[in-house]
Amino acid sequence: MSVDIATVKRVAHLARIRVTEEEAAALQGELNAILGFVEQLNEVDVAGVEPMTSVIPMAVKRREDVVDDGGIAADIVRNAPLTDENYFLVPKVVE
Amino acid sequence: MSELTALTIAGIREGLRRKDFSAVELTEAYLAAIERFNQAFNAYVAVTPERALEMAGESDRRIAEGEARALEGVPLGIKDLFCTKGIHSQAASHVLDGFKPPYESTVTANLWRDGGVMLGKLNMDEFAMGSSNETSYYGPVVNPWRRRGGNAQLVPGGSSGGSAAAVAAHLCAGATATDTGGSIRQPAAFTGTVGIKPTYGRCSRRGIVAFASSLDQAGPIARTVRDAAIMLRTMASVDPKDTTSADVEVPDYEAAIGESVKGLRIGIPREYRVDGMPEEIEKLWQAGMDWYRAAGAELVEISLPHTKYALPAYYIVAPAEASSNLARYDGVRYGLRVPGDDIVDMYEKTRAAGFGREVKRRVLIGTYVLSAGYYDAYYLRAQKVRTLIKRDFEEAFQAGIDAILTPATPSSAFGIGEKAGGDPVEMYLNDIFTVTVNMAGLPGIAVPAGLDPAGLPLGLQLIGRPFDEATLFRAAQVIEDSAGSFTPEAWW
Image (cartoon, rainbow over all chains, first blue to last red; front, side, top):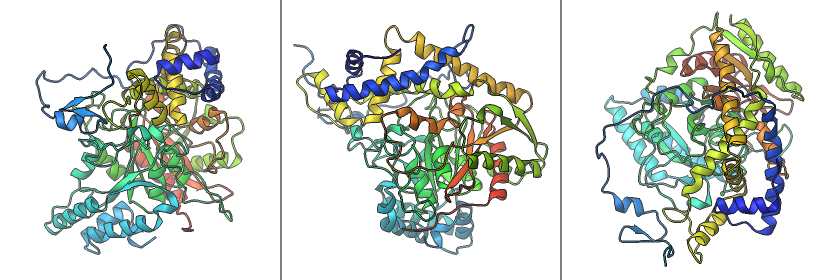
């Protein structure tokens, strides 16, 4: 499978990355090189094979359902580019 | 290189115990070396002298009181991927501009608990995506090794290029690194250092900036096998804050070093004999086999039939996970923000300005293979192939193989800019011998084993059973004893 320029732009929008016409053209070639490379996986017979879901077989760990952290709003927003009284600020989303 | 900075971690431990020098003197020697020589390598992206001297002072107090800890006074460099409280942690990306984490990663917290001294943060490929350290926002790292008689600048490998270069150039005694497809072992091989990627789940991923969560693992880069064993014992832990951290006690890896390898069954996988493999790699591999035979180990030819599919499967799984992990860089909670007309415009402009080319490429591939209609054809199929890759190894180990010997890389270090052409796959091929190990979650160690005809270091890789890092250290010592150690000739 290979991607056309419209697909590159659509995927870039899905990924929320603005690309220029020039970048889209370069990316098209690069993505097709990668997609061409991974094509060889079609040679492998995967009938009846379970996809890997856990790297090391282990039960998912659980912890007590208790509050063990928190009350650090100022720490959490400290690195944000724009805040107001411990809130993150974003451009208007709802009219 | 001063006498103090030439010491191994084991040598530092001994020298501090004998009071040949103080921890502060040692740290001052490293800070002076960084001050003078870092510009030649671009290995550090942030240096923390005040913090280092404060920690070294505490070490001297502990030593005076007879309370030295496992890594007391050892000056360490930390890959920029690890969150360090209040200190530069940007994964060498512009998108994390100015980020100073309000918490400490588990791995680095373990190092400080055991008396390690932080010298600063080390350069790397942006978000650990790269095999040459050329994708860093801070520019490439220069390998302390040069071709004999030449002065071309070579890459130190990647993504942990800053870690490997700093260890090889004696700008730290040891360094933290991470490995998603070969990012510890390939730079170790390119710089004549020792690097181990432990079993998935051995080191906590808490506080390490995520690239591909089912593949990422932290480990040390050090100058000797013993030093790597000393560091890993401290870095590894069982962490309730990482749900994939394995509930397996951390053994004393150093105790395994020096044990005989007599009777050990070393597998030689025939699929690693790839087309067009340079003669010197072939020779190096043969030398490794001869050393093991001489040490009394048994060599067994094995087959890992799905080896060639590991790299293509990796280039679906890793970008898919990366596209999801990197969604968090949106200009809202941390780092860079480029203003926009509305929120989507702000997101798109921020991510366009914040991510470098390689990162964008991988996020787009990941987004594509996960998008509606393509998930089964790409991601699901790759995860099935991954099951088969893991099964190959399981069958070898079930047949009684204790460790597998392979080359670490298909070549020695290449020149900066040499592989910057239009085809990204050419760079990806660097990881053909290492990536299988990440796909199967196994431990793998790269050990320097010789020099190529141009005088550049080459490494061998040993792959072990899950959580059997001790056998890897034991077996790796045989290579180190046989091949000797490798130090670049100082041109800086």
